Length: 232
Length: 232
DNA sequence: ACAATAGTGTCTTTCAGACACTATGTG
DNA sequence: CACATAGTGTCTGAAAGACACTATTGT
Figure 1 (cartoon, rainbow over the protein chains, first blue to last red):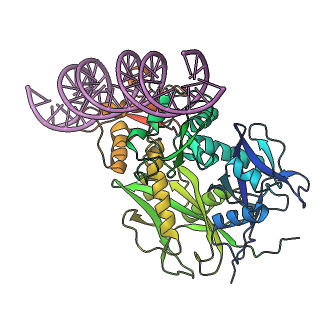
Figure 2 (figure 1 turned 60 degrees about the horizontal axis):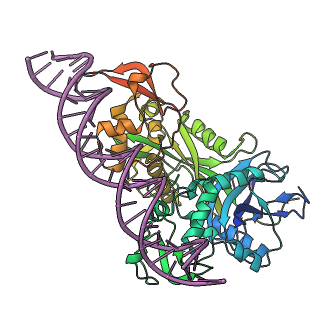
Figure 3 (figure 1 turned 135 degrees about the vertical axis):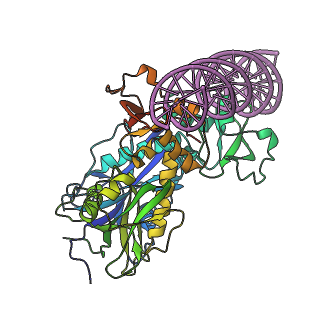
């Protein structure tokens, strides 16, 4: 027997972020159905009780069905609920944050989405603007003490690229030396390409990216690492 | 018109933590209904769409109805969902963490609950054991870089009491001087009792707690402050 | 006076950050 | 060789931690 209270609707929303031209952008699409038909909204959908194993599974399925792509990083943000967020009545939305490198987006022909600078948000439907704001805050905060920004870059990247992201996010510059020692970079001792120490934050490859000057070593992120001390 | 998918049940669970005899304890009660009748469980309940304004409001109402008390601190933890966590089928639980000083508990005649050491958990119903584990992890982690532990103490407390909690949680000792300078304590400059600087982490009162020795000044927490550097 | 705990000052060590120097590619 | 960027070493100043010294109560 079911309980006697009215059950609210449960949906999953996804704040899909990427780095385009040095700016954080969020994926939005125009709603095809009412309510809010024609307005900009986050991708989202309802739980399919016959195929989803968890809230995160629902989020992955929604993205896969809409665009065919799998984000490099996904985590729950917060669950929003209340009587006013959807005109149809009391509703629940389990919000997620997802990160993806910009390169993977253009390939996957994800023309479904339009990308907007998170610091110049247009009008959004329901409480989606608030969800984006919280997501960006979470990402910026977590970036200050973890390797989270790596998931916004291609799988292989140079230290200068990575440093650029951190400086982008925090609006401050740091000397190369300081930056590298923070990440525990000591290339001289590593055997590049070798499976590095589990404790290492980044893994050095034996590939290089050259321009008109000395080529830079390419790195790969080992895992989501938390720094003991916040960056800035 | 409603969507066509089956809507899962939505409930709110609360991991209510307190500090008893220097140990973190969680509030559990025995279920009076099936499924899991007679087993230990977290307090929780369904959203009342006619009276709750948010998920947090539901959590506060559930606690108030069950025990009459209002926690000093409450935040969302994570939303658990899946086909197997409840034998009745796909279900969603929005888990919360709540903190309350032990003193307020005994007063409020909250005989509803039994308290268990979080490091010696008994068998729990559904996925509640996992919820407790995640909650404790969140609290311990947040304690390492914030004033969160203050909400486990009475409103007025001495610095030695506070230091004791931090040492309890991390299992390491710290010299008084280091601890006080971390909190930015400089009593000499404060006008005790005065509304202190907004930036101050703790507020000095002009009250003291005496034993058989020099009395210790009582402090009150200003707000939830985050330290730039983690404690341990 | 003495015991016990509160509160403060100082010294040492460690580490973050600035900066300069070396290395290695291109034209 | 000039130039540009990658990568490393060194020096300095600030802050964390250890420890000892002073302060204030009760007995």
